[in-house]
Length: 382
Length: 155
Image (tube, rainbow over all chains, first blue to last red; front, side, top):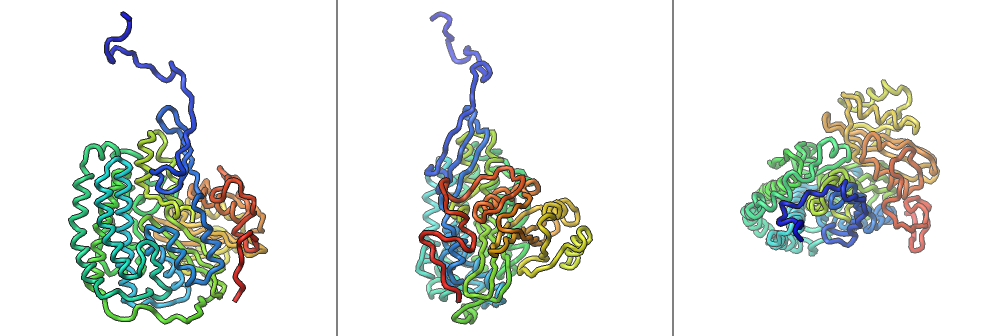
């Protein structure tokens, strides 16, 4: 036993060349909790370091595009809720807007305000889910509870308006299905005031937390040209420093009437993606506040015929969902049923970039990077 | 650039092969021959006054006798939006644009799998959305017949 090393400093470092190593495949998912749904990743590993990753998707493929060819425009609105069930209002809005643009329908002012309020509340709710689960993946349980506490209040507002908490089926071609209930405005204003200090609370828990910084700062850097090459949009693209937001640059609905900023990142790492979304919650809250204080009275739905037939033609409209660009390509032949409906979802492209940014990182970092991309699987598979 | 100028820029490079079509929501939309698609995509991305760096969307439409493919392009630098359309026979082949925009990789895999066409020189031509043991044909084709699929009568 005399030549046995006395302490760990005396043990000579053994390199992989001396031992001999080989790459192996690890299967992660589809039921892994950190994949936020059912995404399967095949990881080629060298020890604990990821050499390559192959995402395998399609477990939630419900062929919504095929279903659309067999439903009238009105009948398809509930299905748009299921594209991305965390931001169902924005999916509703995007689809209705594309059909309106195709048919040339003018939406009443009050309906536009209601839509913007719902969109932005939904954006906050979506970012709250993301923040809660992101922190949970990194081992912090408290933010998860805080986030769901606030989200609950938003869902109550939605429930009060349309009777649903997740899949709303609220918007219609030409407006919204019903007016805001009487108590909505005071309660929503109360929420806006309540929510402002809550964002600081999350930041207090996470932003400068050394463990959180260690897990996120400098991890999973996504260069801007790679992001554009892979069509990454939304907060992930803004975190690379590109100031691009469809709400601002190509204002749809009535977004040009509100003051808000486009938060951007600098280093494009996991921490920046976190910061961008935190600030986006503040900006969304600002928009809700302005919309609530200036919402006019009036009609909530434009007059559309009972048998709705948009003219023959094609339209591609895009909208800023909480995950990025959400596009609807509609081909109409002048029937009650769309001839073809293509759903361009943000998560589909955002997930495709994952292999590029996880190479060289460890599995624990993969969990953080994957969570920071805010991919949601029904949005990928459609 | 206005719509006419955008079309003119493409027209100058590819004379007499560009045919305009109507698409709501973009600055300019035109149809080209399928053999030209890779060249025109290179041109759209690499020309400094166009620099279409984002492939926003790729759509395939089945008209039974032919397929139509639409590329929705966007330029961050100039904020132009164009759509390029091409048509090909149902079981035809088309040059992959993945070397130009990596985003096309997954879009092309999806289209190839659901519509039954092939992309030449695609780096990773595996299926993407359907189950591994899928034997039901190409479900997004208009005349596809499935076990539980009943088409609505035309109104």
